Image 1 (cartoon, helix red, strand yellow):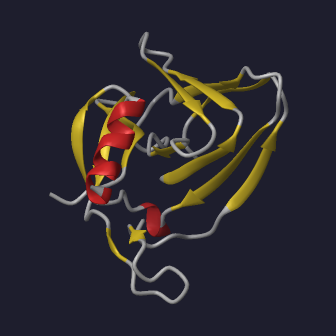
Image 2 (tube, one colour):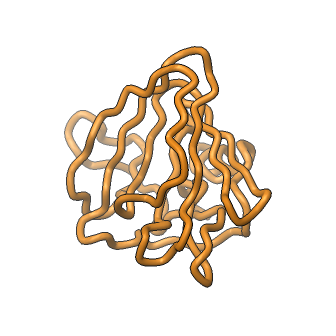
Image 3 (tube, helix red, strand yellow):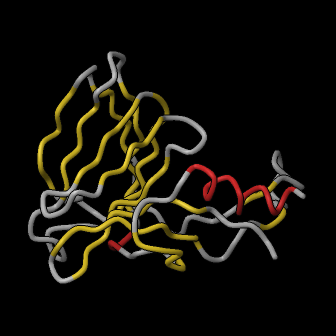
Length: 160
């Protein structure tokens, strides 16, 4: 079985934001691109653009919807995401496992989510919308955020 990228998704059901653990499809393949040939590679789909954000220490982004269906890659710092209609929460540490997908746009979620950055250090993030707001192909592994072990397990299967 080939590995894939498991990541926490902010999505919506019946107008309310929820967390799910997604496995992106298709999984990793061996790259043939010059400079990465032979390394693992996974396509994220067609992307629209990207922005680089520097969030101050202890920043409160408040309640909001995802502005677009987008990958958010936390390069450093810490994000705490909660839902106004639930006790569910996700803690996202910047770095190797610091990637989520936010798809709880105003078109599908009434109240969105709340994000705070409680670290005493700044948080650096890339926001990468999908082209046309397309939700990438995925399999829902379960409701709730992915655990660190789930994020590592599938990816590591490909390396074994």
